[in-house]
Length: 137
Image (cartoon, rainbow, N blue to C red; front, side):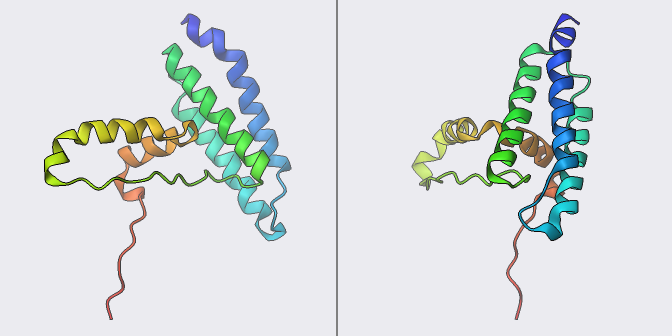
């Protein structure tokens, strides 16, 4: 319980700052301002509500780091959506397949902090992941 009260002020400050940013957001394309404002506010509410029952101190710190990173990136680049991550993939031959755990560990370590909530969403709801399919002639 101490961890929750210890971070309460930081969580509320960041939550208010993100909602304020959502209300005052001006998109680079004026036609999309309202859409981006809605995205910021709804994403903020959803993620904070999803993690409101968290009591683990390290997880709370990680969530705060992610939220702050996403806010900083949005303000810096003028784009509220998470930036795509380009991780170099390595081709595995059959004899290297036994090292797949190592490859997965390296891939997980290379993911930026602001992608944590998106990774959790795709694990919980695999249908949310967009797949590209070739059009049939």
